[in-house]
Length: 495
Image 1 (cartoon, rainbow, N blue to C red):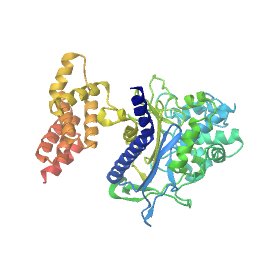
Image 2 (spheres, helix red, strand yellow; image 1 turned 180 degrees about the horizontal axis):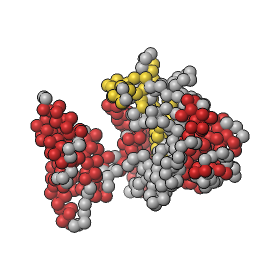
Image 3 (tube, one colour; image 1 turned 45 degrees about the vertical axis):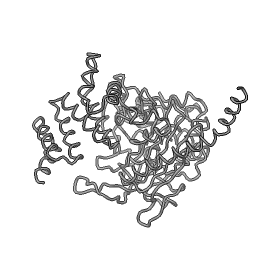
Image 4 (spheres, rainbow, N blue to C red; image 1 turned 90 degrees about the vertical axis):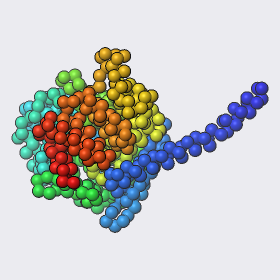
């Protein structure tokens, strides 16, 4: 008995590496298939991926074309602009100066910079790092940076403007604060801030290909920049094929954006940061990754996913699998899952591809409970409804909701939650399930123009124009200002 058990145990141990290898290949292949589909749907020319577990890169892959004009394939050495992920490097640089005793994040700007407007002087470094300063933004409404590439002219223009709001009152994305941080880093480090970041981060973290630059610079192995939008008159139109994008980041602006890198180099940077090579004190990282709390006690960020902002680092603040998640240019993202042994880096050359929106789905291949089909990302109420619908079937959504309310009279799911879940199911191509949820939403919220508008959209996807038209008309009757419903009614009527 003992011998037989020992033999079985030995076989299991000897087989373990093969099993793990097979499991790894399966996961890797699944990720490849997923990204192939996403790139096709979003029309992404090229993408690099790096996945880190246990301080090691377990997947490093490159897909697609770095240069569409000359039909050049992307490689692991292709350089991608990381745009505003650069701000995370600036956050590290500031914390390095904190560790060196050069400054504190609670210092007012006036402690380190002279000749600032009176209203700016008591704004803290933490507030400019977290975009809660109220200082006016030097990015113009036309997308152009003030000063036409000249730092002195940019500062002269921006300092004439009034403060936008009381510091700490709200989150408002702002580039001016990062220009000021660059001035401070240069002053306190004794070298230009780009040189400080190059020597204290690129070199230390083993990032041989990473550099500063933009569309003007001649960059060997550049993956370029592409976009699906093109200016037409005062607005923009979306095209079916990518076109060349051009953007410049003046040198004084490169604490906010301006780094180009590879997924391999970025993975080395994440590993160096987490292992203490860039910041010696773990408390420094905790401080750097803690989102700012506004004057009203809440946190503020870009959207429902990246809903907080720390010291140069957007945060995904949530109970399950929280993350810090620098994003850049709508084209690149770095997700470090704080409670999990997982980091995911996605770099693309298409502005608007928004890899942050599908990073959690990649995480689901490594952490199954994070798969959307398993209910990850849903609110507590939606999880209960999802569990009930798995048993009863999505076509029984109304009955399932009634049962949950019978069990708990206080049970409620908002219109926004149901609408968001419906679109999530739609993105997963679970059309019948999405239709059931959109139907449930209009039953629960019969006075919501948006709910009927969404139901009209799913019927269009299902190629049921008559049903779509009925619901668009209901939506427009509830809200005469609903331009989408009006447009779709006209289009469907003309069929």
